[in-house]
Length: 156
Image (cartoon, rainbow, N blue to C red; front, side, top):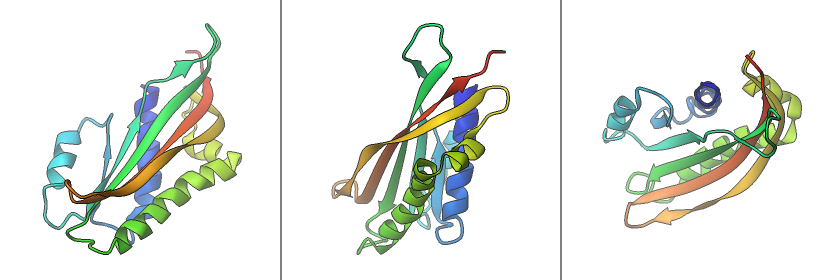
């Protein structure tokens, strides 16, 4: 499935961006079959937080034309009981945002990073907005960013 493959690629780029400074942030993909194991890791007291990636099913604007849009949502939750002042949250958010901004700024990087051979040919990238703040009840700093992958689904 193309969406699952795109999610795997996106996970890899966020792992590269966060692994050095934030090895204790769990990255979870919604299409990944090992999600239960990933979610169990979040129960570990040493885990600072989680970055969740959700690649939604594609949609088409025009019937029988293979140009599609694939919505993506990234959500970063950092435990506020561990990161009381939010310094780690701000740094992790900046690192994650840089991945997205690079795709927004450079089509060539987006096309290279998110092409799926014989399945998805990237044609454009659009950052759609998001939200941020602290959820005092859940005791987490939150950052959400949505974006849309535009491309052509190649005929098989």
